[in-house]
Length: 132
Image 1 (cartoon, rainbow, N blue to C red):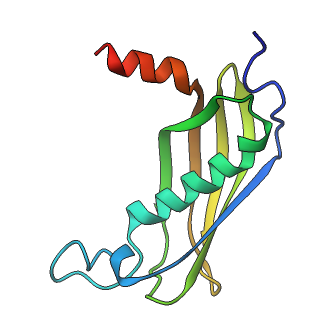
Image 2 (cartoon, one colour):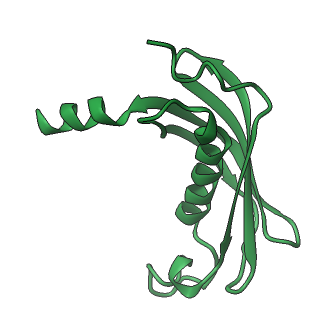
């Protein structure tokens, strides 16, 4: 079988946008906190951008899953703004890839860092989970 990342190249880009709603804020989860885009939701947008960067180049039945995040949340984003997360493939190693990620809210950069993902075969993964 061919390697699942053989068609992925350094420099490939992905993007994911999300409109900040009250439900996506830290204040919606923790009483007394401000209604600004939460760090976990920003990381999720970065993960989705990262997956989008390589998904079209994976064989059928394969996806990538997050395994490591190294993220800085730089500025608050209020409800109503659109956050655009971007990802760029930095390096490939076997079935692992490292991506540079950023998030912008239309006014400024609100987050950056790196994100590692691994390629998995969904069928094999499901079998392994079922046997645990």
